[in-house]
Length: 217
Image 1 (spheres, rainbow, N blue to C red):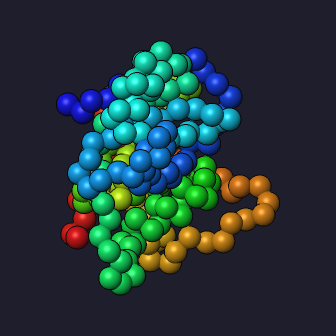
Image 2 (spheres, helix red, strand yellow; image 1 turned 60 degrees about the vertical axis):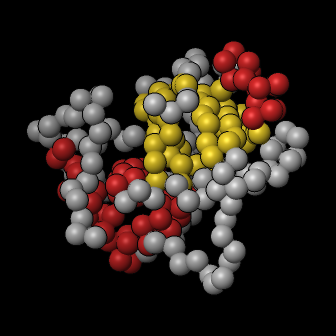
């Protein structure tokens, strides 16, 4: 099991649950550069209604942050990782369409795309582009902490608690976004979520995850 823990602080005001934070290339406490395959520790905590990430070396972790991670209620998650030095940029990196769309949706932070964001994250987890580092509950809602397996970027993705009867419509939305791209943001009030009528839909247990059907790719 990963060396990680989760905490459940008291309920706070509404936060921005969408967040992408890259892995640091040096200890954010002492400033020492990380070497390839060097162990490091990461903290995720709440600050000004946002999630903040801190990457530190083992020495700084043991000297300063280990006790804070266990006692500070602002800390929602922490884990241990292995730093992988990025390869030299021989040519521009061509990102996968699903990964690019997920980043755009996280940056947009539009509630109507919450189900699509979750489904994209699950798809990328299946492709081993992302992996679940942690999960915790915030105001009665589960939030998954995903880490990019190659570059260490962290995505915090709320679980929309989809019902089985809603899954097909959300998958169609994802397919349309992948084909046509994300439309420009509206300046007015957010439109209502494009979800089907949930009447008669089968509820999914709170301890299970609704996942998209396997794709051909």
